[in-house]
Image 1 (cartoon, each protein chain N blue to C red):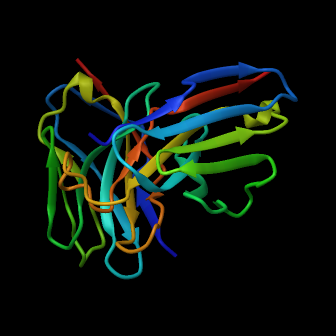
Image 2: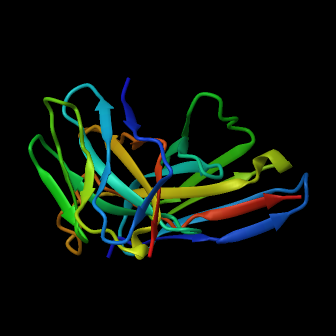
Image 3: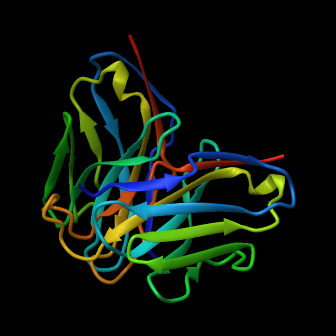
Length: 123
Length: 113
Protein backbone atom coordinates (compact mmCIF):
# COMPACT_ATOMS: atom_id res chain seq x y z
CA UNK A 1 0.00 0.00 0.00
CA UNK A 2 0.80 3.71 -0.12
CA UNK A 3 2.15 3.86 -3.66
CA UNK A 4 2.58 7.10 -5.53
CA UNK A 5 3.23 7.09 -9.25
CA UNK A 6 4.44 9.79 -11.59
CA UNK A 7 4.07 9.99 -15.32
CA UNK A 8 6.09 10.36 -17.36
CA UNK A 9 9.28 9.18 -15.70
CA UNK A 10 11.31 11.23 -18.11
CA UNK A 11 10.57 13.72 -20.86
CA UNK A 12 12.60 15.67 -23.37
CA UNK A 13 10.99 18.68 -24.98
CA UNK A 14 11.84 21.68 -27.06
CA UNK A 15 12.15 25.13 -25.58
CA UNK A 16 8.82 26.96 -25.57
CA UNK A 17 6.61 23.91 -25.26
CA UNK A 18 4.54 22.92 -22.24
CA UNK A 19 4.93 19.70 -20.32
CA UNK A 20 2.42 18.07 -17.98
CA UNK A 21 3.52 15.77 -15.18
CA UNK A 22 0.99 13.62 -13.35
CA UNK A 23 1.20 12.47 -9.77
CA UNK A 24 -1.18 9.76 -8.61
CA UNK A 25 -1.78 8.07 -5.30
CA UNK A 26 -2.62 4.56 -6.43
CA UNK A 27 -4.13 2.96 -3.37
CA UNK A 28 -5.03 5.77 -1.02
CA UNK A 29 -6.65 9.17 -1.02
CA UNK A 30 -4.42 12.17 -0.56
CA UNK A 31 -5.69 15.41 0.90
CA UNK A 32 -2.45 17.11 0.11
CA UNK A 33 0.22 16.64 -2.49
CA UNK A 34 3.53 18.42 -2.60
CA UNK A 35 5.69 19.23 -5.59
CA UNK A 36 9.46 19.40 -5.24
CA UNK A 37 12.25 20.22 -7.59
CA UNK A 38 15.71 18.75 -7.32
CA UNK A 39 18.78 19.98 -9.13
CA UNK A 40 21.70 17.63 -9.70
CA UNK A 41 23.44 16.70 -6.46
CA UNK A 42 21.26 19.05 -4.45
CA UNK A 43 18.42 18.73 -2.02
CA UNK A 44 14.73 18.91 -2.73
CA UNK A 45 13.22 22.34 -2.98
CA UNK A 46 9.54 22.62 -2.22
CA UNK A 47 7.72 24.32 -5.07
CA UNK A 48 4.12 24.21 -3.96
CA UNK A 49 1.54 22.56 -1.77
CA UNK A 50 -1.53 21.28 -3.55
CA UNK A 51 -4.83 20.65 -1.79
CA UNK A 52 -7.68 18.87 -3.50
CA UNK A 53 -10.29 21.27 -4.80
CA UNK A 54 -8.42 24.46 -3.98
CA UNK A 55 -5.64 26.58 -5.38
CA UNK A 56 -2.09 25.51 -4.79
CA UNK A 57 0.10 27.41 -2.38
CA UNK A 58 3.38 28.33 -3.99
CA UNK A 59 6.66 28.89 -2.23
CA UNK A 60 8.39 32.21 -2.51
CA UNK A 61 10.21 32.57 -5.78
CA UNK A 62 8.18 29.96 -7.64
CA UNK A 63 6.21 31.42 -10.55
CA UNK A 64 2.64 30.18 -10.32
CA UNK A 65 1.91 31.12 -13.92
CA UNK A 66 4.83 29.07 -15.12
CA UNK A 67 4.27 26.04 -12.93
CA UNK A 68 0.56 25.34 -13.07
CA UNK A 69 -0.73 22.91 -10.49
CA UNK A 70 -4.11 21.26 -10.59
CA UNK A 71 -5.38 18.91 -7.90
CA UNK A 72 -8.64 17.75 -9.39
CA UNK A 73 -9.24 14.71 -7.23
CA UNK A 74 -8.03 13.01 -4.09
CA UNK A 75 -5.76 10.78 -6.16
CA UNK A 76 -4.40 13.05 -8.85
CA UNK A 77 -2.35 16.22 -9.02
CA UNK A 78 -0.74 17.60 -12.14
CA UNK A 79 2.14 19.99 -12.65
CA UNK A 80 2.37 21.76 -15.99
CA UNK A 81 5.58 23.51 -16.88
CA UNK A 82 4.50 26.16 -19.35
CA UNK A 83 6.76 27.59 -22.04
CA UNK A 84 9.62 25.47 -20.80
CA UNK A 85 13.17 26.72 -21.06
CA UNK A 86 16.49 24.91 -20.57
CA UNK A 87 16.78 26.30 -17.05
CA UNK A 88 13.60 24.40 -16.16
CA UNK A 89 15.44 21.14 -16.74
CA UNK A 90 15.37 19.33 -13.45
CA UNK A 91 14.08 16.34 -11.53
CA UNK A 92 10.52 16.93 -10.34
CA UNK A 93 9.22 14.86 -7.46
CA UNK A 94 5.78 14.75 -5.94
CA UNK A 95 4.65 13.41 -2.62
CA UNK A 96 1.25 12.67 -1.15
CA UNK A 97 -0.05 12.73 2.38
CA UNK A 98 -2.80 10.27 3.23
CA UNK A 99 -6.28 11.40 4.15
CA UNK A 100 -6.24 9.05 7.08
CA UNK A 101 -4.05 6.45 8.69
CA UNK A 102 -3.67 3.66 6.17
CA UNK A 103 -4.65 0.12 7.04
CA UNK A 104 -1.82 -1.14 4.85
CA UNK A 105 0.63 1.13 6.62
CA UNK A 106 -0.43 1.59 10.24
CA UNK A 107 2.50 3.80 11.06
CA UNK A 108 1.71 6.15 8.22
CA UNK A 109 0.55 9.04 10.39
CA UNK A 110 2.04 12.29 9.18
CA UNK A 111 4.03 10.48 6.53
CA UNK A 112 4.48 11.60 2.98
CA UNK A 113 4.81 9.04 0.23
CA UNK A 114 7.00 10.00 -2.66
CA UNK A 115 6.67 9.37 -6.34
CA UNK A 116 9.67 8.09 -8.30
CA UNK A 117 10.27 11.48 -9.92
CA UNK A 118 10.16 12.88 -13.46
CA UNK A 119 13.29 13.98 -15.18
CA UNK A 120 12.62 16.93 -17.48
CA UNK A 121 15.15 17.96 -20.09
CA UNK A 122 14.42 21.06 -22.13
CA UNK A 123 16.49 21.47 -25.26
CA UNK B 1 11.70 28.87 10.98
CA UNK B 2 12.26 25.17 10.69
CA UNK B 3 15.55 23.95 9.25
CA UNK B 4 17.70 20.85 9.01
CA UNK B 5 21.46 20.74 8.90
CA UNK B 6 23.27 17.58 7.97
CA UNK B 7 26.90 16.81 7.44
CA UNK B 8 28.22 17.49 4.01
CA UNK B 9 29.48 14.69 1.90
CA UNK B 10 30.54 12.90 0.05
CA UNK B 11 31.28 10.16 2.52
CA UNK B 12 33.31 7.24 1.27
CA UNK B 13 33.58 4.09 3.36
CA UNK B 14 34.84 0.60 2.93
CA UNK B 15 32.39 -2.26 3.15
CA UNK B 16 31.58 -3.26 6.75
CA UNK B 17 32.68 0.11 8.14
CA UNK B 18 30.61 1.99 10.70
CA UNK B 19 28.50 4.84 9.38
CA UNK B 20 27.38 8.02 11.09
CA UNK B 21 25.67 10.87 9.28
CA UNK B 22 24.99 13.79 11.58
CA UNK B 23 21.74 15.69 11.46
CA UNK B 24 20.60 18.55 13.66
CA UNK B 25 17.42 20.53 13.42
CA UNK B 26 15.80 23.77 14.40
CA UNK B 27 12.06 23.72 14.88
CA UNK B 28 9.25 25.11 16.94
CA UNK B 29 7.34 22.61 18.97
CA UNK B 30 7.90 18.91 18.56
CA UNK B 31 8.42 17.89 14.95
CA UNK B 32 8.55 14.43 13.47
CA UNK B 33 11.96 13.48 12.11
CA UNK B 34 12.79 11.36 9.10
CA UNK B 35 15.61 9.89 7.13
CA UNK B 36 15.03 9.35 3.43
CA UNK B 37 17.28 7.54 0.99
CA UNK B 38 17.61 8.22 -2.72
CA UNK B 39 19.28 5.63 -4.88
CA UNK B 40 20.76 6.76 -8.21
CA UNK B 41 18.09 7.82 -10.67
CA UNK B 42 15.23 7.12 -8.28
CA UNK B 43 12.86 9.03 -6.05
CA UNK B 44 12.96 9.19 -2.29
CA UNK B 45 12.21 6.28 -0.03
CA UNK B 46 11.49 6.59 3.64
CA UNK B 47 14.24 4.85 5.56
CA UNK B 48 13.11 5.47 9.11
CA UNK B 49 11.34 7.98 11.28
CA UNK B 50 10.68 9.07 14.85
CA UNK B 51 7.73 11.10 16.00
CA UNK B 52 8.68 12.04 19.56
CA UNK B 53 11.65 12.57 21.79
CA UNK B 54 13.72 9.50 22.65
CA UNK B 55 12.06 7.45 19.93
CA UNK B 56 14.44 5.31 17.93
CA UNK B 57 13.69 4.66 14.29
CA UNK B 58 15.28 1.64 12.69
CA UNK B 59 15.19 -0.13 9.35
CA UNK B 60 17.57 -2.27 7.29
CA UNK B 61 20.26 -2.01 9.96
CA UNK B 62 20.06 1.78 10.11
CA UNK B 63 19.11 3.54 13.32
CA UNK B 64 18.50 7.08 14.48
CA UNK B 65 17.37 8.38 17.87
CA UNK B 66 15.33 11.55 18.34
CA UNK B 67 17.35 13.61 20.84
CA UNK B 68 15.44 16.66 21.90
CA UNK B 69 18.14 17.92 24.26
CA UNK B 70 20.66 18.12 21.44
CA UNK B 71 18.10 18.63 18.65
CA UNK B 72 19.72 15.82 16.74
CA UNK B 73 18.72 12.76 14.73
CA UNK B 74 22.00 11.17 13.66
CA UNK B 75 21.86 8.21 11.30
CA UNK B 76 24.00 5.18 12.12
CA UNK B 77 24.70 1.76 10.72
CA UNK B 78 27.13 -0.71 12.16
CA UNK B 79 28.30 -2.33 8.95
CA UNK B 80 27.64 -0.74 5.59
CA UNK B 81 27.34 -2.58 2.31
CA UNK B 82 28.01 -1.52 -1.24
CA UNK B 83 24.25 -1.53 -1.81
CA UNK B 84 23.91 1.27 0.78
CA UNK B 85 25.56 3.70 -1.62
CA UNK B 86 23.01 6.46 -2.07
CA UNK B 87 22.12 9.98 -0.98
CA UNK B 88 20.62 10.28 2.48
CA UNK B 89 18.33 13.14 3.45
CA UNK B 90 17.36 14.15 6.95
CA UNK B 91 13.98 15.87 7.16
CA UNK B 92 11.40 17.15 9.58
CA UNK B 93 7.78 18.14 9.56
CA UNK B 94 5.45 19.63 12.10
CA UNK B 95 2.95 17.27 13.59
CA UNK B 96 -0.04 19.40 12.71
CA UNK B 97 -1.66 20.63 9.57
CA UNK B 98 -0.64 19.93 6.02
CA UNK B 99 2.91 21.03 6.47
CA UNK B 100 5.57 19.98 3.99
CA UNK B 101 8.81 18.27 4.79
CA UNK B 102 11.87 20.40 5.33
CA UNK B 103 14.94 18.65 4.00
CA UNK B 104 18.60 18.85 4.73
CA UNK B 105 20.97 19.18 1.80
CA UNK B 106 21.63 15.47 1.59
CA UNK B 107 24.74 13.41 2.16
CA UNK B 108 26.12 11.22 -0.57
CA UNK B 109 27.47 7.91 0.67
CA UNK B 110 29.73 5.72 -1.42
CA UNK B 111 30.66 2.29 -0.11
CA UNK B 112 33.53 0.53 -1.80
CA UNK B 113 34.23 -3.18 -1.70
